[in-house]
Image (cartoon, rainbow, N blue to C red; front, side, top):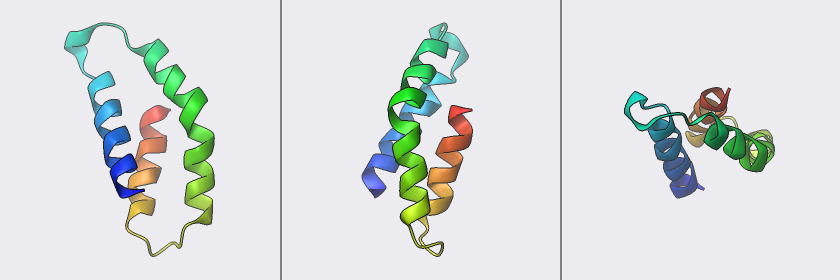
Length: 63
């Protein structure tokens, strides 16, 4: 899970760069394919897990 969170964070970071053109459709695709899984993962994780904060920041990046 940790590696998946890191990869998704890196992808989202790239989509918010200003020098690569429009990425709104890319963010929409990420939202449609991954957001439900991310939410379900956060719900099922122990709140003390350090990855919870990272997953929440990924969710915020999507919105």
